[in-house]
Image 1 (cartoon, one colour):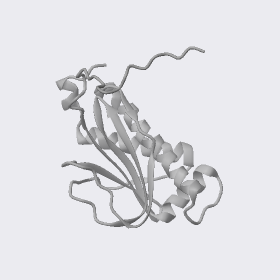
Image 2 (cartoon, helix red, strand yellow):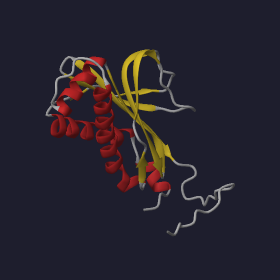
Image 3 (cartoon, helix red, strand yellow):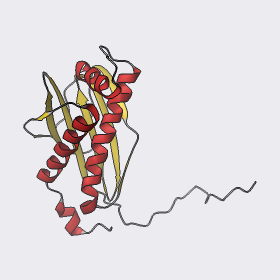
Length: 186
């Protein structure tokens, strides 16, 4: 599917929010057997204030480009991992971080799939997970993030996306400085 000016105008914030809410609800219900309650959506444009917890980021590339993420507290991350892996976790470890990355991959992947019929094919990067205290994440440029908070009983988490048309989509590019790969024969 090619992206034209009609597709560029087709993505409204409401459509993105609907896709995020549907994907998050589906992943939590089917994969974690947990229920989440969506909160009031907001737009974040300014540089983020320092925070603590776990953030999992995934890049989107194709006819539209951007990023998606899931951010939550340490306790919420442990609860997500416990539900996904069916093993109790009380503290952050490698398994918990991997579980949060996998849940993020499922949510953002489902959002991507829901949007591709209108926006064209997109690919996902491997998730990057950040854990710690007093850190900041930000995107370069003047980006707007659509932030959809969710309550998981007493815990709160946010699924957010920043997505825009790819200005280079459809342009023919060449790889200067790199030879064309050849098949190796044995």
